[in-house]
Length: 352
Ligand code: SF4
Image 1: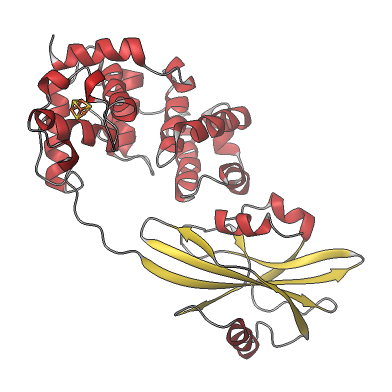
Image 2: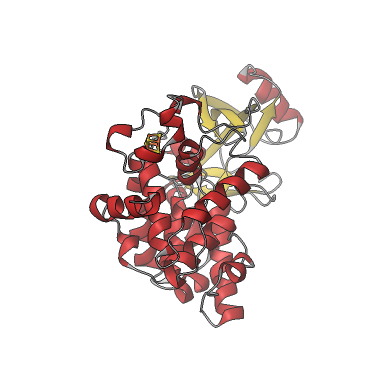
C-alpha cells in the first residue's frame, strides 16, 4: 500500500466520531474550524453545539449583536476569532447572498479566513484538491520526510504543503486532509508518538533514523514580554445594590468591545500603595474618599507573545462617585452578562 492508501485505511478504522464530521455544510465546517483553532476538541465540541444552537445558520450569526457573539465565545480566548467570524458571516450574507464561496481562492477573500481554513472548507465541502497545513500536518509530514527547514518559516510551510499536496488523494481530498490531521492528533503526537501503531511507519524517515524527537524543526521562540496590570475594582452601594465601575475597551486590541476594570499598568510588580497614589494623582481616584477592602494574589494570564501578571485591588467608595473618564457603573449581578476577558472573568468568579 502507498502512504496515502495506508493513511486513508487507518482513518476509516480509527477516526473519532465528531459532530462536524457528519456534515459538509460550509457554515458548520467554518464554525468548527474557527472554534478549533487553538482549542482542544473536548472544549471546542461544547462551544460548537452552543454556537449552532444560538446561530443555526450564517444568517442568524450575521444578524446577531457582537456583544452576544463575544459573550457566547467567552472562555475560548483569542477574541479576534469571534469578531472575524461574525464579520465574515455578515460579509457572506451581504455580498454572497448567504452562500459561502466554493473555492479556497474565493474563501480567502473573506476576512478571518486564511490558507488553512480556506483549504479545509474547500476540500471538505467542495472536494477541491488542496492540502491543508496546520500544526498536526506539519508535524506528521516533517517527521515522515525528516524536513530540516523550520516548519514555521515560509520556506518550511511551502515544503510541507508541497509534500502534503503530492500525497493528497484527489478523489477524496477532504477525507485525506482529515486523516493526516487525525494521525497527528492521535498517533504522531508532539511527545511520545505511538510509532508502533502508526500506519505510515514503514515510510517514516525520522523513525528510520531514530531521530523522532528532532522533528519538527522550529524557529527558536522569543521570550514573552511581561506586563504588570493593576486593576482597580471600585464599588459603591446605592439603594442596597452594589455597583462596580467598569470600562468598555474601545482600543483596537484583542479585548476590543469587552469589559474590564480601570487599570494602572506598572513597569514592574509595585506596592499597592504606590498604585493607589498614582490612581489619585491621575484623577481616577481623586474625586472621592475610599477604603481598600482587599488586594488579590497575582493572576497569571498567558497570551501568545505576552504574559500578563495582574492584581486586583478592591476599593469601596462611600456613596455614588462622579464617574471619571470613560467608566460606567454596572450592578454587580449584571456583570456576568457582559463579555469579559478570561482574566477578568477568573477574578470576577471569586468576587463575593
Ligand atoms: S512513525 Fe512515528 S514519527 Fe513517523 S509518522 Fe508515524 S507516529 Fe509519526
